Image 1 (cartoon, rainbow, N blue to C red):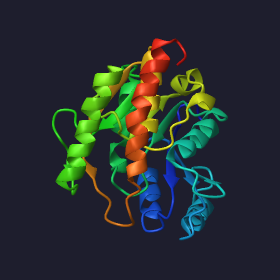
Image 2 (cartoon, rainbow, N blue to C red; image 1 turned 90 degrees about the horizontal axis):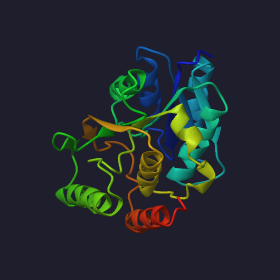
Image 3 (cartoon, one colour; image 1 turned 90 degrees about the vertical axis):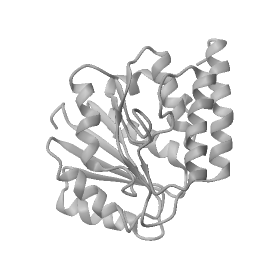
Image 4 (cartoon, helix red, strand yellow; image 1 turned 30 degrees about the horizontal axis):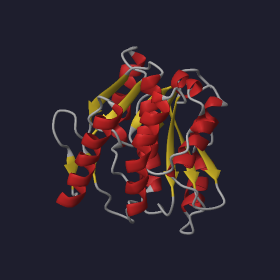
Length: 243
């Protein structure tokens, strides 16, 4: 394995309609992108589709099957550990539902390669709102969440909950992954905040986010409540030197 390879971690639960398209689009990109799918026991056969892709691309497509629906945050932690156990120097996150355009991945990696940033976020809000097919109520909720989070944590990011991002390996090595306990969209806030507090450079690049056309959204009221409380926990733990 070449040291410059990038691992793209894609959590899945019932993404059979989308996963083949996503993985193939990543593999078609210039550069050396590998894919790790972390599947939470999808009953629709998502894992079996990935197994078929592994047969065709055994060196570039990888799969971790988990016993059940264990959540977004723990899926990413599983992917991070997988990357750190190997020679990957950059680790990206993205959704499986084509809301994130795989063609934007090189733009996330570029600031890291240029030594301009350590964490790069594909931002829906930097330089304007770039979201397709969301109802106004969800857009207001997401945008308000950013204002709320910035006010409490003092993060300067415009898109604090974005799930399309890339980490330099050293960031993941510096964060105690055992202490990351968010499991919804607040996972993104927690990782951003911990990287920022450790002095790593965060940057945003504009992307267009398109709401899924196949399958069902994983958004829930419980996810929103977790994010609301998590920002206070992070701020207080930081204040008392326990982050």
